[in-house]
Every structure is written in structure tokens, then in C-alpha cells.
Length: 187
Image (cartoon, rainbow, N blue to C red):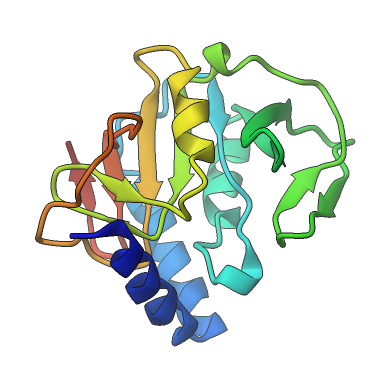
């Protein structure tokens, strides 16, 4: 299926969700995350949700990571280069919301992407083969291409997968897992 149509479809589906539905679905996703065999690593990258885009509330997964005493990394996006820098989350981390509504660390201890073991990935749509559709700027594909080969890529979605395969590009990085509100998909 064409990515442009999928972006439109899932943005509309998200727009129809209430805050309560997003909260309930996000909690369910975090509970399913506990089923994964990814918890023996040390460096985890997680995104903070763009509230106006009605993304998955990752605070529940963040609480799990903090409870397991993991090193947590949060990105800061550069919209001129479409690259991200990754900062260690500490008690001193201060956040700002950029012009696109993305909560980002103001500054901090930068960590090389090669150290990251697990990445939680925002997405709009995904399929049964692990292909995903984001917002189309390629931030995560660039980021993932700079990670070590064995990095574990975990998508999180408020919806179930597309049954039809999503057309992929050469630069796309497929998922290892995707967590929906009802189950974990393993690829």
C-alpha cells in the first residue's frame, strides 16, 4: 500500500481518539512490552510523544525502564540535516518542546548511537512483515542506519497492522517487534 495514503489514514484514525483512549491503549502497549525478551540490555532509546499528533504515551514504558535501572536515551532532532543526537536521561535533564511539538532534552550527556541496544520507534502504520511508515522525513531510518547491526527495533502502535504489505524503500529499516494494544508482533 502507498505510504502517503497510509499516513493520511492513520493520522485521521488517531485524530478520532480521545485522551482517555490514548491513555488506556498506551498502558496496554506498556504491559505487552513486558512480554518481550529485551530487558537484559543496558542502553534503551525511547521517544517522547508529540501530544498534538496523538502519539503513544511512552511514559509507561519509560517508567518500566527506570524501574529496571536502565540507561535511557532521548533524542534531539535537527530539522536542517534530518539527523538526531541522543542524550542520556538524568535527574538534571531539562526538556523543551520544539516548534514541531516534540519534547526534547535541552542539552546533556550525548551518547553515540552505536551504544544503543534497543530502540522504541514511533510510527503511523506497519504491516505483518515488520515494515513501517513514519512521518516521511527519514529521521529514524538515518538514526537506525548508524546503530550497531544487532540493535533491537521495537515499534509501538495504537492500531493493528496492515494486512497488505507496505511498499518499502532501500533506506527503510524493518522492525524486530511491534507492540499493539492487543499483542506483540515478532519479525
